[in-house]
Length: 288
Image (tube, rainbow, N blue to C red):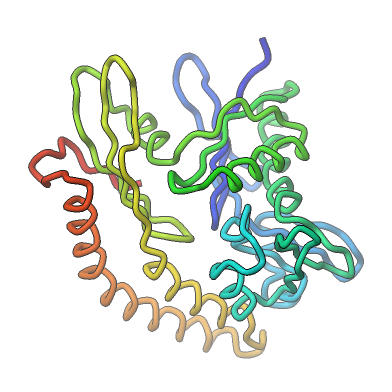
């Protein structure tokens, strides 16, 4: 039986893991990092670069460097997320024939699943290099709030990358499993996912008979959008003024976190209340 890998297709970073000797192991890329930036760029000479190398292109080649494309996957052209991206992204977005959103790089138009496939392929090749064997099957994690269109788009991306996606796993469920929460009795846990796209809070029921069940999830996009907007400014700035931009980004980032921490605490309380769960009913709180 061929080995199955697990891929976290993140807004900001991706990572890949496998099971070795009964234990999960996150595989490092060639640079020694266990996460790879979810960034792809087409250089002036037409070469495609991914990860850390692509990240460097955000300053010198912003119009042809794609980042945070996960926010667009499975969405229609008229969706608020796409309309916001039109105003903030340096790369060019175009409307597809089926009212989907696409990205134009160096005159060639790519679908969002094709862009996601670049990262899945990178994770697949990384795993094959580390494991010394072909990899054709994967489990991919997605936000719990992803709808059917978004989940199908991830499956399509896997197919393009040469992977049979055996299962689309909710990120809070994956986090609960990864942190080793043992299913010994019925419990309710809360998983906080501070990601590159949103701040998600998921209420998960743990039951020895049914396993993990996400009963409620809620996302606060504004938590990350302020930081994203600052990063967008940093991506567009003149390289000659990068040091000044770095300082400004750091100062603005500190102000953002000072403002959003109380807002996040209020958000968590409201979500627990709307889910009908009292804080005292939650056995564990996980920050993922």
